[in-house]
Amino acid sequence: MKKLQILGTGCPKCKQLAILTEEAAKELGIGYEIVKVTDINEIVSFGVMSTPALVVDGVVKVAGKVPPVAELKKLIA
Image 1 (cartoon, rainbow, N blue to C red):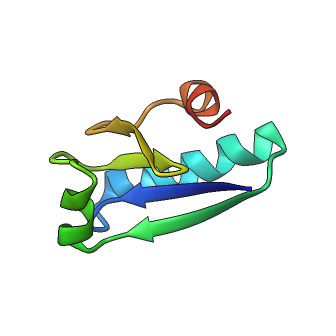
Image 2: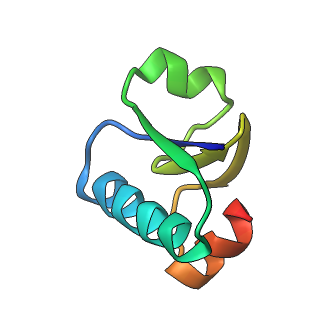
């Protein structure tokens, strides 16, 4: 099971990244858990200075942008 964390304070881009990440995970047919991280101190602990960000199994994969579903699928797989 993949742990997918969305780092962000709840802005529209953060919400969009969560929606597209879930869509990508469903298309891949994998087991996953999406966790939204909104605490700024926790976000900074990942070394992320620009949100939204996607963390897959503890590794920051993208920060500061919302990639398309096709790219998200590659990052998650």
